[in-house]
Image 1: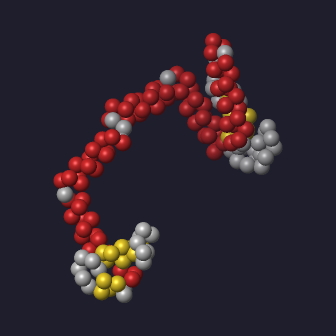
Image 2: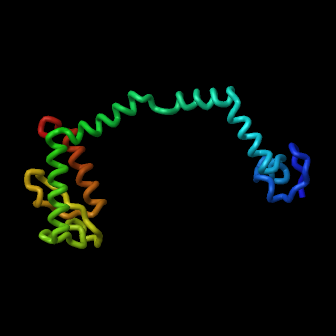
Image 3: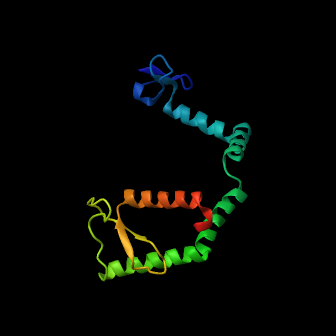
Length: 154
């Protein structure tokens, strides 16, 4: 049993929230009084202004958020982005129809998995090699490094 600091009622120890900083490991207010205290604090103009200011400091500006969305949209609006989406959709459709069989292992390392189809050329949507996630990511990283090293050929 413990006495609540606010309501002065003796309650069971489970009625108090845990707090490692206290000697007995519990807050000095019962859960009901703590809830009321926190609600009053949240309603105070000083607390609300502090929260608003914290939100302004930490959240991205609407313009930055909008620009990030526009960048993603622009990427898929480009001709290459459209080709990528169309090639991926065509391959998915053919796999679903059963005209193309997805193997149960990676063509590069032989690991048993559900491999991704990697397009060398988006103009040939059904010409793919089947790679596990690790090999597929490694291939894209290697292609990215080649493009950065020799930008005029990329």
